[in-house]
Amino acid sequence: MGSAGKAAKPPRWYWWIFSAKLVCSSCAIECPVWNMYELFTPHKKFDVKKATRRPGENVVITGGARGIGKEIVKKLLMLDLHVIMGVRNETAAKTMVDEFRKARITTGTVDILPLDLKSFESVREFATQVLQKYTKIHILINNAGLYDQPYEKTEDGYEITFQVNYLSHFLLTNMLLPKLTYAGTSEKASRIVNVSSIAHYPGKIDVDDIWMEKVFGQNWAYGNSKLMQGISSKDFNDRLVKEGYPVRSFSVHPGCIASGLYETYPKIVQGYFWLMFKNCEKGADGVLYVALSPDVEKDGGKYFQNCSTFFQNSQVDNIDVQKALWEASCKATGWKDSMNAKPKVSPNRKNTPAIVITKDSGAESISSAKSKATKDDLERESETENETSPNEVTVSPKPTPTSKEETDTIPSVDSN
Ligand SMILES: NC(=O)c1ccc[n+]([C@@H]2O[C@H](COP(=O)([O-])OP(=O)(O)OC[C@H]3O[C@@H](n4cnc5c(N)ncnc54)[C@H](OP(=O)(O)O)[C@@H]3O)[C@@H](O)[C@H]2O)c1
Image 1 (cartoon, rainbow, N blue to C red):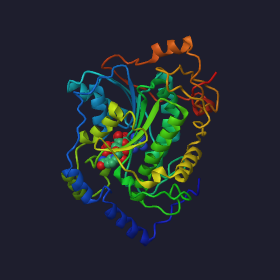
Image 2 (cartoon, protein in one colour; image 1 turned 45 degrees about the vertical axis):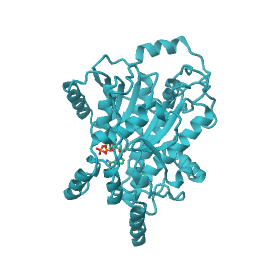
Image 3 (tube, rainbow, N blue to C red; image 1 turned 90 degrees about the horizontal axis):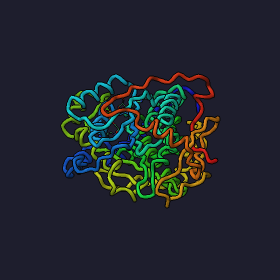
Image 4 (cartoon, helix red, strand yellow; image 1 turned 90 degrees about the vertical axis):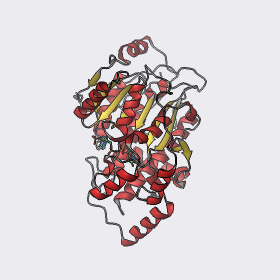
């Protein structure tokens, strides 16, 4: 990674070009035209009452104790799912679940685990816990995000917006892939849902300066981080299809939503947003649609707005940008490019074979799911799957690493 110093301020021309792009594209968050468009376009609701209940299925969500995520968790519980929340503030998450219970949402179960996306170590700890506790993950919702952050580097040496919005989710998705693979079938693939944004439209990634070390703008960085989620969703999906994994990847704009995301803005601007933007409940609709609707089964790799597919920034389909981003992301997170070379799960199988978690170092690889469905796996599945009893909330403590080797280990699917 480059120098730890502050990135250079963008030159004046950048603001002119960027502002012009915002207006011309009519697609940026600040653009009133786009807001008006959203305001006058009928909102498509995800009707939880008509949706199929999904007891026994596991959903991992990042964030979720407030904002759009809170509404997503609420609906997932109403559909009787088991929700694994990765949050910074476990008390807030627990209070939120108590609120739901008081509001007579008695279905579904929750497991609250610590996760700070500013730190790759925290992501690894979270993922390791999830991998150890659960045999299957049916849906992963990469929801958490931040906006309008001044230039700051994390302990890992990356600009904060890129790390929280994109890089940590890249690492998490790769780490959880074995369990997503195990949960998916050829009829019903598991889903990775990246909560992106219309702010991805004016984004432009410079492959020679992916993390904006040379020229930085905070709104631009947000747009680029959301564009990266779109590129990654498409690239990931192509790889999954090519390799025959029963997992599909999507990106979705939740709508322009009045939430805590804009807390850095002056109160008067926030007031405008409260008037013009949709509420968090509506923001959850589009994400839930992509996560749960059977209609999107064949739409892997696509971008959604208001429960419909939409065109994307042209860089999403640019193979050179995809390749550069994948390589830079692997380098940043220490992930080994494993998906390309590994064996497949037969798309024709109804259920994918069992997963064996190995502890040997460097075990990032997703290898053959043709592996044996051992007795141990089946036993572990029955022991660990949904350990939480109905209506119970589990707040799991931060795991205490016993050795560096253990914390650095990334559990995987073993081929043998
Ligand atoms: N609101 C909009 O208009 C809009 C438009 C397009 C896209 N989006 C996207 O929608 C997603 C949800 O945003 P929102 O509107 O619900 O915003 P929000 O109300 O500000 O919620 C952000 C969520 O992200 C979590 N988070 C932030 N930094 C984190 C970190 N370092 N580690 C773990 N979690 C972290 C927050 O957790 P804490 O409670 O711990 O802070 C919170 O749960 C974001 O990805 C955002 O980019 C929003």
